[in-house]
Image 1 (cartoon, helix red, strand yellow):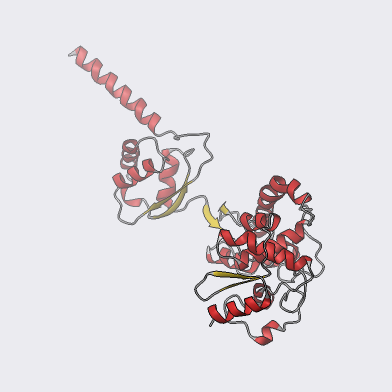
Image 2 (tube, helix red, strand yellow):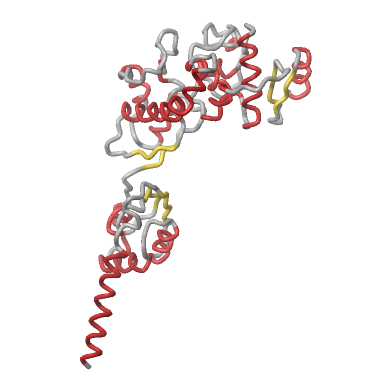
Length: 334
């Protein structure tokens, strides 16, 4: 009997230590973040197995036991959560119980301009409409010395347009501030572009503002990675030879007409952003280019082509002469 009692005590002690150990963070030093989607109607066991699969808990059994001991089975919320391996089981259960994660995932798509970024943050519930646009006009960003002078740039975006690096960001709603968010995107641009490719930019013969402006045109004008460097070569060649760039996206940008058909009146818009009417680059970027478009502007591919267009089938056609370009237009655009 005494031996049995000691065995039971030892098993209980081992169980207790296992339980306490299993509630600890999987990896306290990890900076990884995992998006976990909890579907409505999942059982505690199904949630526990999902969390194990996502590498955020040590033991699904310990998770289930903790939830049941706390009486939280019915209070775990459905939704999408950002969970970290550095969280304890207690912290994870608290997040699932309240239905509110500390962070939300925000993806700024390549090719978005500041008006679209503002609308995205409104849609995600971070702010009222116009707060980012207002900050762009009134906040001080002089710390970022790579930004261009303000003269001649579009009023709605000023010196910031094109420099908000498109990427996925983890953002906290409770302390969200438009200025801090903008500074974070500018800092990412500095790290991913200037600090990584600064030497190549300096040796390119182009200044940073020219490159980012051209990259924004490439971002809006191309649909596949294979097109980028070729279109970059065409546009730089036209620019260097003093020919008009003829990029419809610049017209759409300045008249804020992203999708509707462009009219003859639109093409006659009297703005230096209108590259269908004025030669040279527009005064500044028309969107935030992704790194691939920036690298295409930095490393254009030489070719015999002077023209390109996308047909109604979505395929790009290149041409060496205006005559060939007009034939492509007749054959592939209705």
